[in-house]
Length: 100
Ligand code: SF4
Image (tube, rainbow, N blue to C red; front, side):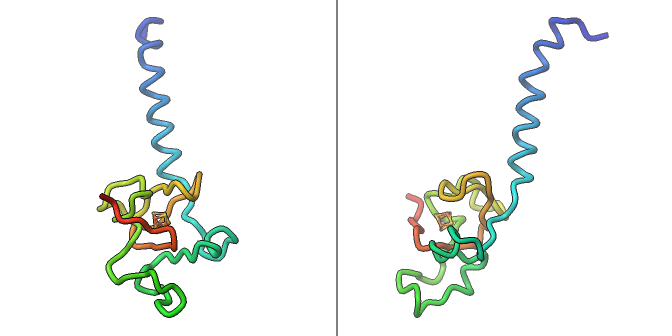
């Protein structure tokens, strides 16, 4: 049986779990969306048009960008530029800034 005190102690843990689940379910950024297009976002950096985006250098990807809010090994994670969405770890955009 769960006492009232135990229940109150469990609530923050349950809320944290829901928060993590919501983050995990965030949709991937659609490269065709206006904001993504404006930033030249590609879900696969290997497909970036190097002639159009001269700042792109082979090897750059969201997973090594300072704005990527996940581990380098994560397939996708939130990015500060796309609130509520996830970007692909192997993606890229013109705001790329190498993680220090
Ligand atoms: S700012 Fe960085 S992490 Fe965000 S989409 Fe652009 S390259 Fe990827």
